[in-house]
Each structure stands twice: as C-alpha cells, then as structure tokens.
Image (tube, rainbow, N blue to C red; front, side):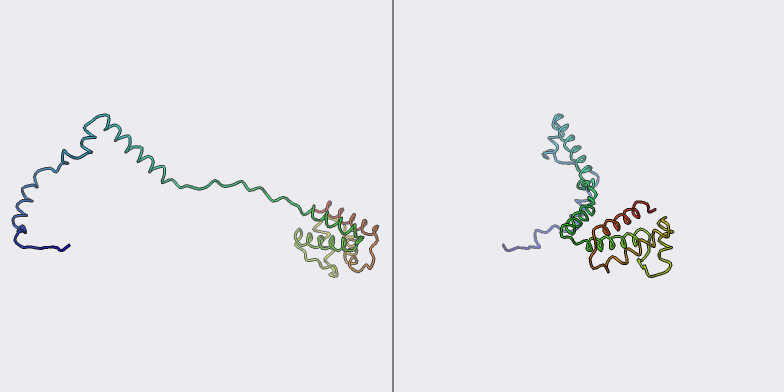
Length: 179
C-alpha cells in the first residue's frame, strides 16, 4: 500500500542522542520472555539443550570430513592370448592351412624380438643374427637357422605338417632358452 511520511512525528537527532547516552551505562540483557531463557532456567531442559548443541557440533565436525566412495578392487586382466593362439592354431590346423600357422608364428617371433630385445627384425642385415644371438644367449648357428627358416616360411607354396612341427620346435627352444 501507500507509504505516508510525516516530519511531525519524527524524533529530533538531539533527543535520540540523549536517549542513547542514558542507556549506554546499562548492560544489555535478554528479556525474560525469551524461550531460550526459560529452557536454560530449567536444569533438565538446559542439559538437553547443551547435549543437542554438542551433538550438532560433533555432527558438523565429522560431516565436514571428506567423503569418498570405496575404491573397488580391480583384478588384473586375464591373459587370454595363449587361448587365442591355441584356438586360431586349431582352426588353421583343421583347415589344413599349415602355412598360415607358420606365418602367424613368424609374426609373433618378430614382435617378441622387437619388444624383448629392442631389435627390429631385419634378417637380411649381416649383424642382426649376431646381435640377436648375443642378446638372447643362443648360439649363432641356432639363430641363423631360425632366421633362415622364418625368412623362408612365407615363400613355401605347400607347407608340410612335418616342417611346421620342426619350425614350432625351433621356436619353442628359442622362447624357453632365451634370456
């Protein structure tokens, strides 16, 4: 609604200053009609009030602690590469595709040499067989035979099962005795 202002009922500044000076010496107290004053005057209610305030402070203290969800246990991934190789091997073996098995084994050997010994597979290079022999701990003659067989695997037109078994035995010996 409308606001009415009148200068007549306004208290002059000198009167307000005088009233303030009169009350300056008296301490300010809560009025006795305050509900908290009644609670604090009654001993059981005062104890309940103090307990409530204490519990509230404890709640705030512990509630401000950082909350974090429980970190789940992560199991290491299961190495299923051997199962994969076994399944692929049986698939190629059932189809009679011995050459594909040998090509996969040769690629696996190249990757193993690159990761384990830090050598790029270069069988045409003269010092490659010596470096691989020195790093793997095999004799130079064995490494040269393995490199020669690995180089000739993709050129076979028809790989016989006995040759595949011989190549696999060479690879197994290399893997088992490598440092």
